[in-house]
Length: 200
Image (tube, rainbow, N blue to C red):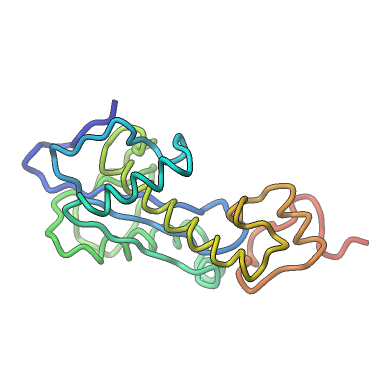
């Protein structure tokens, strides 16, 4: 069962999570969400535990009922420049900066965070399965990123991004081997696994 808050009912807490760190292409996307303390939804959970239909339905509810929310994107070019860990922190920072409500505590999914923001924060491993606001952030990050990749898929249908969303599936890597990379691929990532782009 997800918990409504970490510190106290009076503390304005903002859940933060990202999606797309392990992908071979596209942006890393983060979301930040402040939920009402009495927010309750039986379906709400870590986005990875939900179906596409459940995530989409919850996104509508969260964006309607949240006290505040923001979504931050960091492009594949930026990822290649600053590395994926720093890009994840930057996406989170961009999402948080969109929120105008004063935040008293950030609840960050994972075990690390770094930012020039002065807001106190707490890192929580698997926080998206523990706290409402982090679970909500995971859903917004995932659905916004999926939507972006589905748009790109119409331009590059051979990579099947509408299904794999840019993750390193066997099918995606075989498409890279056959068709090469696009402007959306992360050039600093191991795009082919054990294979080489220059193998015969």
